[in-house]
Length: 247
Image (cartoon, rainbow, N blue to C red; front, side, top):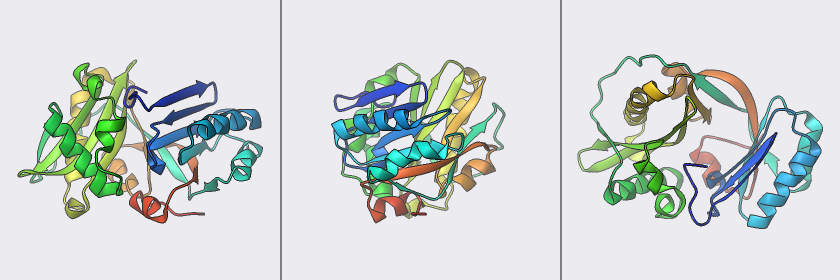
């Protein structure tokens, strides 16, 4: 909720569900969840929130959720994707690897625009998504941080980290297609983990797509939950961008 929080943002939460809806027409810009002992009623209430906003959405469902709770999702036109994972990493050093990038924190409007271009290139979203949806003012407070791996004057990769109550969480780790498999994403991750180590004593959390899981595992993230994303409204291109496919 700290990462988003713009004028179009809708946030809702209960004990076993939440919705973070930016209002953008992109699948992975509207993230929800069913977890713990979520019930059919939790699912139906969550669907009411999504329907009021009227956007495509993805609902990761934890392995702890009983199967009957997903029936309302299917009835509402959601489709399950292949299973993904939630991961956690304790605070510990990451052995640095050489890379050709200059990794810098995002501070200026020009930096934000550069990060936005990476998101557009990586996921095919409309230009300006970051400026419209992300809580840029939170960068000044320090509990939201963003980084860019620069290759000369070109932004190669970006990532966002939120901290609070002893935890850190990684979001929107993206690499422009022209720079993939060159270590740009890892360079951003190494810098961000080093910067939040002092304020994330409980460790760092993230949700790993099939495309991103090998990177996170290589720097010490371990699986603590399996999740099945249910989607409605996403295109084949959006699914391909995150390395996902329909079950």
